[in-house]
Structures are given as C-alpha cells and as structure tokens.
Image 1 (cartoon, rainbow, N blue to C red):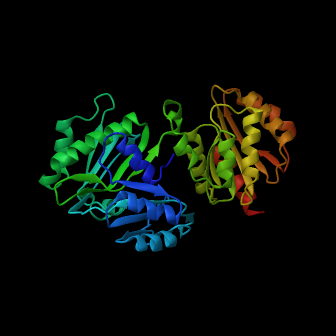
Image 2: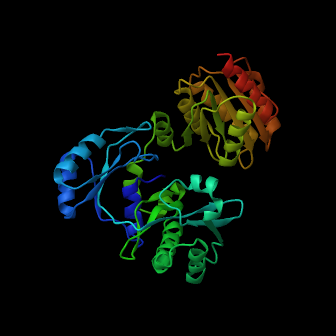
Length: 381
C-alpha cells in the first residue's frame, strides 16, 4: 500500500521524525486558507501523486503570497502527471536547505535482513546515484532480532560521509526511521531528501512509504486504504480480495502464490509474450476464487489468452480442477485458456480436466510449454 507524500509525513510524524508543517487540501480556496493558517511565507505547493517527476512537470511551486498560492494551486489541481491526476496538494512551510541526503530502509529478501541505505547525495533518484556513483551509497544489513542501535547508526553516518554538523541529527532520525519501518509494518520507508538546515537541524523534507497491507489488521489504516490509486481492473480485484497488479501485455495470468506468479511473468516474457497482469489467488483455488480471478481478467480488453499456472501444495489437484470447471460454468470467457497443473494430486486433477479440453481450454505439461502456447494463442487473436 503506497502512501502519498502527505500521508507519509503524517506516518513519520507519529514516530517523532521532524517534518515540515503543512496541510493537504483539495480545492484552491482551501489551499489559500491553509497557507494562511501556516502563518509564514514562502510556502511550497506540492502535487500529491504516486509517481516521480513532479517538479519537472510543474507540480511543485514556491509561493510568496496568497495570490501566488491561488495561482499555483489552480494550475496544479487537476494536472496530469505521467497519467496521474492531481486531486490533492500539500501546502507546507518552505525550508532553508544547506545540504541534501538520502536515507531508506527496505527488506533484502535474499539476505533475510533489513537493508538500510544512506547517501550524502540526496535530492535525486537513488537509482541515478547507484548507477553514476555507487560508492556514494553506504549500506548496512540489519538482523531483525538485533535491530539498529545508536553506535551502529553513528558508524553508518560516518561511512556515508555526511557533514559532521548533521551527524547527531541524522543518527536520531535514522533510529526513528528504523522504528517507523519495523513497528509501522512498512515495506519501504524512504526520505529523499533528508536535509541539513543552515541552523544545523536535520529534517525530513519528503516521505515515500509503502506499507505491508498484510499487516492491516494490526493498524488503523482505513484512511490510507481509502486513497489508494487503482485502475478499474485493480479495483475489481481488490473488491474480490485478490492480489492483483495490472500490466500492459496480452497474456492474462492466474497463479497460486506470489513466487509462482512472479515466475509465471518471467516465463511468459521468456516465451516472447507480455503479461497483462500479476494475479495471485493464494493457497485456495476453489470455484469462488477462480471465478473471481477469471472475471477480473476477462474484463480486461487487452487480454487475448489466459494462462492458469497452479502448483498444488496444501490445495490438491482435484480441488483445483473442480474449481476451474465450476468457475467456467459461471463466467463466460472470451479468450482461450491454457492450464498447467502440477504438484499434489496433479494427475487426478488433469484427469478431471481432460474431458473438458478443447481449442478454448487447453492443457500443457510444463510451465514453459504452457506459457509458449498462451503466447502463441494471444498472438493469433
């Protein structure tokens, strides 16, 4: 669950990370009023979209008067930035900046540890820094059992070559940012830029936060959930409780398990096709779940073929097969379907499916063969 900047700053503030005072508004008049309540000029008007490049698109402006706030808010609200419409702007007091840094925490799954990245080169995309000057990024790997302590954070700041004047403030914020990341159940907690003010204060000028929606039951995230940006396909999948991400290809994908779904995307690309979606139905492949998945994919006009890739574990092959057959009786599918079924009781499942096979419903023995057939069918339509 990705947060807008203003929500990320609210999230950070709940962990005592210093952020700029500001307000999120949806109208021009509210923008002018918010600037008045902040009580000091200049203020910054920032488009709230979950995509980079706001500044270059004209979505960030410095206003010195109420008239300028009105002008800039009028221009920014409703603006299209890389396909995202600006419905909210964040009005905040402008900050004097001496230096800009970068700081983040995320999960390194291969290392089974949390990864912290810190750089004295902030204010630009970290990917650009990694490509042009990788030595400028100081990385640490943190065992979740041990956590991050003050001596480690201080050594990390020194390794990143931050200004000594920023050391104490940066250490304090990094410890708080780690707590926000872990206790707040975030997948990503990023500050770019983390700024050093001429006064010596260190301050989070921006916030990028992705929350783990599997942890929603532990938190009060209804406000964040209500503002999630989803296209029509993603919204339909969300309403059915499906893990879905829309893509721009022509092969619709249904798989059980996130890892298998990701592998399925890769093998479709390997076969020369382009996946239309990521869709993980989880551990259950009963008729209700399968029908919901097929309905979501079937409503995407870009889909020309559907690849159902199931590896039975706890869910047995005959249950999967019966779920598919019943689901096809509920949903009228326009695109041909290719099934690969393996794992627990796969032979029984394939035997159940066999009498129903046709040009519209095909089955292949391996994942690569099934992907190749789905790509071939999509290309022929």
